[in-house]
Length: 410
Image 1 (cartoon, rainbow, N blue to C red):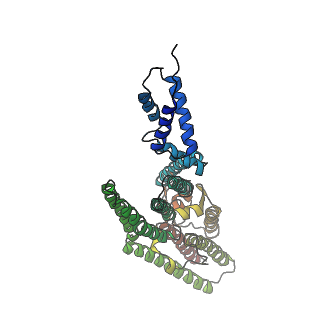
Image 2 (image 1 turned 60 degrees about the vertical axis):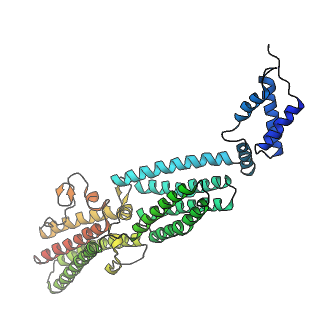
Image 3 (image 1 turned 45 degrees about the horizontal axis):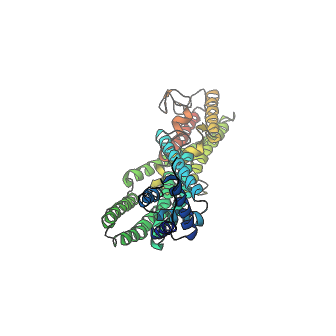
């Protein structure tokens, strides 16, 4: 059986002084390390073993780069007692945000229901949990105030970028302001702080220049996205086409109203025709106004084409959320279909006519359905607002044309 090694006072003083020389200044930590190292040496070193060699091997097992790491970690634990808990929450929130964001993006590409909630949850988790926790943890690992300021600016840019993306894909008001604010903070706060902090150190000079170029390039791309606008010519043509279609519908409405004034009908069919046509057209106008107000956050009582902007035309998320609940038609669409069905039946019953193929509401092979989708989804689900506006106004015009044709048979 081997005898235990016995440390001399001189060796103990050597270990204590070496621990201090290696950067450990906290007295309690010095004593704990001293006690721990002494126990290891006395228990594992042979009686005639090489003390200095065994000590160097033992002390090197306590760190990766230098012994001061233990003191830094101890200071973190003393000043930040929940360090490891917050670190786990940060990692979990980061993974969760990535999974939610990627799932939401895939759902959005496939036009599946649930894309918006997934994207919102993913970006909010990233912005309000992962990035703030990252700042708290990283700021504790640096001592200089400028380094903390750089970390704070980087996290702020990340939060602004995430929220700007969320506002952009959801077409929420203020999205352009957020994009501009993101580029300003990135270009005039983060980039200067990072560049002038790293360029002074010869060891980090090259990395600082390369990273700064990437930051400026990325910020430039963001700025380009802000200034990139869809073709105003095409969008203005779409707006004008919708406006002219609406004017045609209104003209037909006035013509029909004038015709009622000269119709002599004792059966009451003309009054019923007028009432039914006006009711369903008002219902469609209500849906159009509802969509405009939802997209722009207004409270208009009717559609004003002077307020229709090009950015509204490509929005299909908000109209789909208004007109459908997880892919199921909302009462607005269900009631519209019921009213169209009743109107068609009224025309057949009272005037022995049909709607001349203009008000088709059944699924199947027609010009509004591909034979696989229901009438509701073929016309209103995941359809850009500009096209939705045309479809709804065309329905109003078709009703007025059917009404005008029926007037002639009274």
